[in-house]
Amino acid sequence: MRGMKKASELVGATPSAQVRPVSLALRRAVATFDALAPSLPIVVGCSGGADSLALATCLIDAGSRAGHDVYTITVDHGIRPESTAEAEEVVRKLTWLGADKAVREQVQVGSAGGPEAAARDARYEGLARAAAELSAAGAPIWLGHTLDDQAEGVLLSLARGSGTHSLAGMRQGFEGGHVHSRIRPLLGLRRADTEACCNGLGLQYVVDPSNKADGPWKTADGQALRRAALRERALPALAQALGKDAAPALAKSALLARQDDEALEAMAQTILAEVATDEDGQILLQANALASHLPALRRRVLRLAGARVGLTELTATHLQALDALVSNWHGQGPVDLPAGQALREAKTGRMWLRATSER
Image (cartoon, rainbow, N blue to C red; front, side):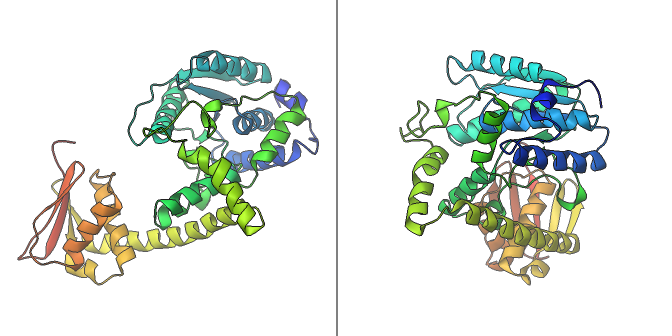
């Protein structure tokens, strides 16, 4: 092991009871990562909140013990006047803890999809950009999402009427024996575990008022942010109504949905290979052959086919219209899609999807 980092001094070879759940989860995750990607650095997104600070600190410890460089990226959304000073303080703390590189990445938050979605998109873009600047392009980003975040996401997906793919929630990042682009090793732990970890390490974490239901950041109609309101109001009300904490059951539902989602996705990939061909920058589907399959599989095949030609923003409404070309054909014209189009040929029964020049 290289020189002892401050993080390793704090965590210790045998972590305390408060620190142990997070530390052991991350030592196991680093061991898996080391087996799958021994040459890559560990790149951590750290806002300075309890989840990400516990993640970063214990990863600096576990990563250095395993011989990996650990880089941290703190995204400054610039939403509040004090956010830059807070981000710079987090960077200083991470440097003190022993991060091999610790940087602040400034982003501009747009408005597409609402404030929470816009901030998330800007954050992920900023993390990827900073990783490239750290000469860590291609390395996965480690994130501090917990079981509570998973439960909140499942409940939001249910409220939106989402399908299995969204209900499957976030993945840990090592599924299928591969390292995925984002690793979330704390999905089996609670927010209380990360707060206890920081307290046990003597580390003060950031409490962002933007994440509060009564905080300064609102939706376009002046309401509380959806996830914040769900966290502070809906989940406690659900727990009171059920007589127990609903978060573990919601997270379990995500796992079960993910297993179903993965099975359906594999079946859809097989069907796509049977009914689709690529031709001149577009994808051609044998509509009659596809029509013989169940609706859930047809829609997945259509989504995968669209993605193959760059149509990655297809909604449930778009997929329903595409499915009508397959299963309810009565001579209807082309279906316009975001940056693309689909059409079924009357004589051949073939259906094509292509991206348009406006992309």
